[in-house]
Length: 605
Image (cartoon, rainbow, N blue to C red; front, side, top):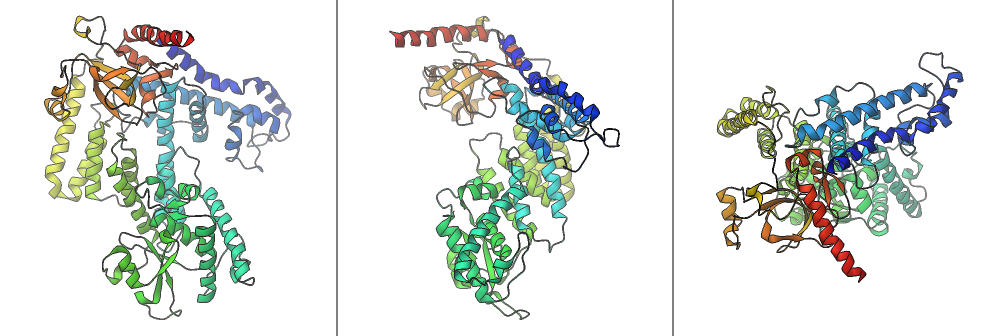
């Protein structure tokens, strides 16, 4: 039965290509379209276009075409179909290749060498992710990972090109959006959309400004164009209008209640939730002010990012007392130097009141994300930490301590190359670079190199998959099976079993720290690997688990790594997990029949 379930998931994905199949016959009209003999193909037929791509997806694909170009849509359709087949082939291979470990550093090499437009490959991955129902979970799991990788690589390349701009290039918003996109690659985030939302706020400010001064020069600015206003009084009118619109009308505010939340640093979330932390609120405030002609500047003030507003005469020699400092986190409050120091509770040098360039602003944003990533407890994939490390090292590739942290993270997560004998190891590359930059790190580097090489030797010694049979005498005490939805008796969390051991297989230190000896059956009882609804993975004693009489889906990012389908009462293992526990599925069916059918009969009575 499990094999059939896996096969059904395999069959669903090829069916995606059939969404447009009934319309393919209509493409024959392209033969007669004028211009087909021209270099570059034929004209665009809007009726055939709908047949070329998924009905829900083709509008998003059309943004990649110019309406003035001649395109042979039949050829485009063929290329899209070929890319779709290639995408499905790669997704199907990932579970078998990477089930036992994280997708390795060079695991995406097949994708990097794809032929044809990347947009079609991505489109197929999106189609897989948008499949309805609770099936094809493993396909969705790996399609998401591949799409995540593809988009992040593209965004990182764009960010690196952005960082090559001269120091006077001051598109703070553009840099912040790159950070947002990199940390949220599956979300539809674009500078154009975020700028459009800010433009709508600017319109509201102009409406308010018109009531203050109907002849204000900012009102004459055309969309996308602005110049700086020099008169302080006119600048002040803009800031008054901004404060009213942002904080009174739209209710933007600093997020004091949930300050240490990564969402506070993502510009699209700041606009949606209308809250953020000092640096994100300041970038929004700065962008609006500059569009309306007020030349505010960013100040990398310790513990609290600020903006400064010049009050001195143009061309005069200025010091820190010639500026008013604006706290966008504090509803646009205008501060003196003394009030700034009072804000953070300490005296600071004049240098810290200076303006900073785009790269320094982005460094602080990513530094905040890095700090949050280090605080992660539940997310055992450490995705935020990995993303923020990537971003920081893209800006400052020779930061020894961060390179060392990245190497440790790879080691901790077991992110290794696909082949254990591969000479180009990401971890070893990082360690070698660290050693070159700072020979003083020899001890830490040597430790990680040693353990990396030991890992390679262990991988060479692995002979095959460990198969656990319930019928084996040593497994006679195992009561539960993979795929069952359970509840923890003591802590009350819901979870799904994805592995079991006849006795506790953890080391003595773990057993002591988790106080396993205090359990009535101690460590001499079956233990279960479970995916918990809070996103964590745990190792639970049999006596602490019980059947969940009201089973529900477990919202865990790794569910698709182990299971192909959720039936409503239990999960069906994918092919790789079933190989390891070949007798469990039959027991699951018996358990479900006994537990949930009996419950239904009691309700009917």
